[in-house]
Amino acid sequence: MPKILIVGGGYAGFYTAWKLEKQLRKGEADVTMVDPLPYMTYQPFLPEVAAGSIEARHSVVAHRRHLKRTHVVTAKVTKIDHAGKVATITPPEGEPYEFAYDQIVVTAGAVSRTFPIPGIADNAIGLKTIEEAVAIRDRLMSNFDKAASLPAGPARDRLLSVVVVGGGFAGIEVFAELRSLASSLVGKYPQLTFDDTHFHLIEAMGRIMPEV
Image (cartoon, rainbow, N blue to C red; front, side, top):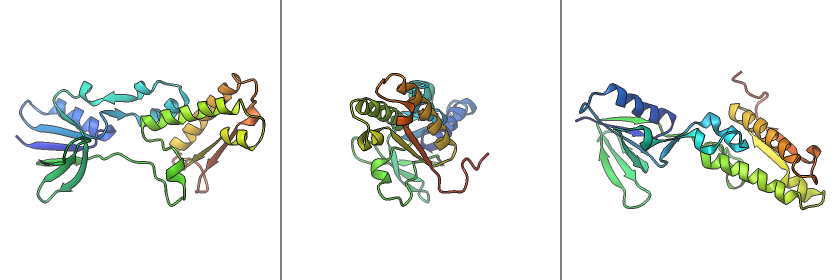
């Protein structure tokens, strides 16, 4: 039976496996999908998750719940030898092993680009995973709690300042969602006002959202 290996279980990888299950006859091919996460994330929903507009669980789809005939492997593909049609799979526990395939589909997911900006990789939070979206929301809400106990000044200003780097679709949407969240939080803290919050959007190009 031909072996099909799908690298990545994000939007492209998940739907590739899902469509193959619908198109392939029983016994026609053996499909394996490898991804370090056990779920697919709807990335366009992440700004809403960051602002608490929707629940985090509503923006993910569990692989094993929806893929009935695909072998789901929660691990990383760390090497591909296409000449020999062998991939190296590295699980979170245990030793790496080789996996022979006949066809391979590479849909490895995107990661947040940090560019050559000193400090951004150590301090900034990306917006590619559900964990990052939840971390952004938690950071903003905890900063409000801290700021409410401080007098006006640089320390409080820093806690209530949000900087979004990138003026594309995701950057603009998360900027608007977080601005909305902060505006609603202000009403719950008598010590704080709208003017105490500071939002900054940084975009290297001459315009924002050039796609539209």
